[in-house]
Length: 166
Image 1 (cartoon, rainbow, N blue to C red):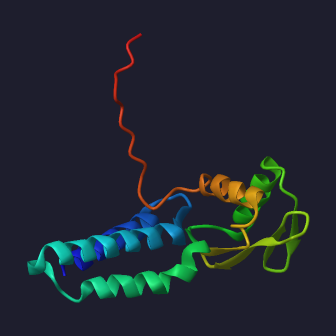
Image 2: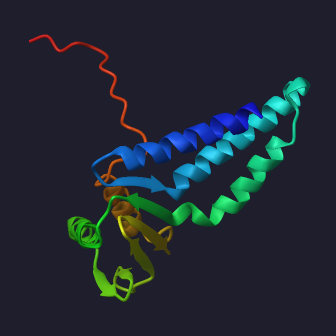
């Protein structure tokens, strides 16, 4: 039960932080999937080694991981506008020298057009769906560059190890 409460608290804080910010925030499906797998593994390991903590929730996390697996290539953008999102995608394609073509509802990437990005917007929330990106090296680079254009779910933690003395 404790793991489920912590998991739901982390997800809730992440969503809350996305809606509180002024800038466009990004939640990647792969990040949520990885968090779920981490909690699933931790709850299974603790259930094996600490029988006092056994409960049915490891099965809940495994089930959640199975359900979230297809959503790994989905990105949720909060406080985004269609025009600015499309402009950002096109700018990143030009920066990576990736050929792209606009198609209805998104972009086709590469010369052969094997990878694509589908864009769905409703009010201030956008959903980007990547297809065929895992088999296309430049499209993966585009994904990384594109993710850096938006604010993540949680703020970046900067640790200064040594004071700069000049």
